[in-house]
Length: 192
Image 1 (tube, rainbow, N blue to C red):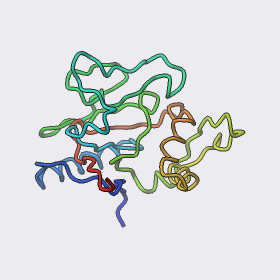
Image 2: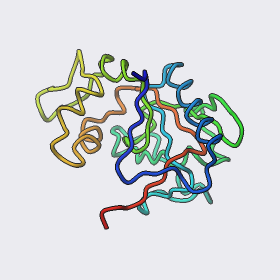
Image 3: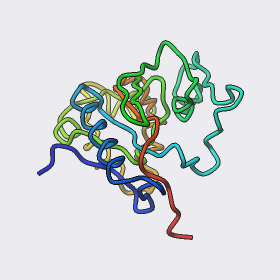
């Protein structure tokens, strides 16, 4: 059994041009970030601009609204954290290696996405996070629920996990997150 799990939707593949050494380096750096405390390590490729929602790095067009009260209001577009000139005291450069680096931040500074991430299996099963869930009578309030249990409670809807995390204002968990500034995996639509 691996102590780490790589979550990929069926339509993600290694980005074009990535060598086996680059794949190994990215995965090894993600494992180190997880061992150092990141609950989620994002590995989406910088080559992959998503479905038109990720704006490019020019002219600071990606800057979030840092003062919003909820995840939706803060307009967290974590794509801005990939930008080489991105600087903010809430996002830290945690490690660097050949052609890439790891940047770390918290859930407060990010929207939710489980696209191409690595997690520590035991931590995802056992560590509890308290979610807001104001409209559903505190279903996920303290002592909280694990990422795995949250997924098990929302799997029936295709976007249940992601939308649920946003509605539950997952930023309030202050969950530690890292991302690779190069990344590995690109979205390739397979269902037409």
